[in-house]
Amino acid sequence: MATIAISSLPVATAAAVGDVLPIVQGGTTKQITNALLFTSPTLVTPALGTVASGNISACTSTSMVMVTPVLGTPTSGNLSNCTSTSMVMVTPVIGAATGTSLTATGVIASTGTAGIGYATGAGGAVTQLTSRTTGVTLNKTAGAITLFSAAGTTTAATFTVTNSTVAATDVVILNQKSGADLYDLMVTAVAAGSFNITFRTTGGTTTETPVFNFAVIKAVAA
Image 1 (cartoon, rainbow, N blue to C red):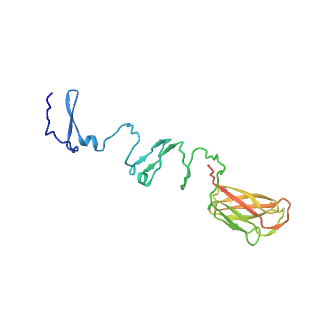
Image 2: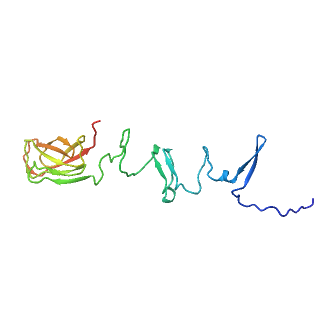
């Protein structure tokens, strides 16, 4: 068989914006332009698989639902500009997270040994001056109050804790942290910015400076 030489074939180049691709549909010749194929195309339910390159740095999602997503290791390069509004994550494993607020419509529960409570920085301490009916000021949601040094008595006494974190609907819990005598403790008034502590011993008369712990539980009337 003789060898046939072919020369002067056209050289392939990149598609230009004005290039067209003819197709025949229903007996009618139509054209698909390069711009239609490659400029801002709309993909309907595509299966992308694993994206090997590029990023989603300018991706914005509104009301996006992520079901058990596997994000890998995000970096500032591929997630720095990604914004999500009202995103719903189903059963995500969040790990350690920080924020300014959290609203939940269901139960917030802890199954670990750390429990649920206030972190370091939420509490404080104050010492009562002059007498055991002298008021104290401590603008923290939790803390320790050291009483004025005096003999214990079974006669009830009351002092006011001024606290700007307290709302009138809140619940304040108390316990005795230290002291030789045992004390009955009661919160006898809660108002916006303050609460009262009423206390008495169960029979002890030791002269000492017992310490009472308190924690404010945020609550609402309705």
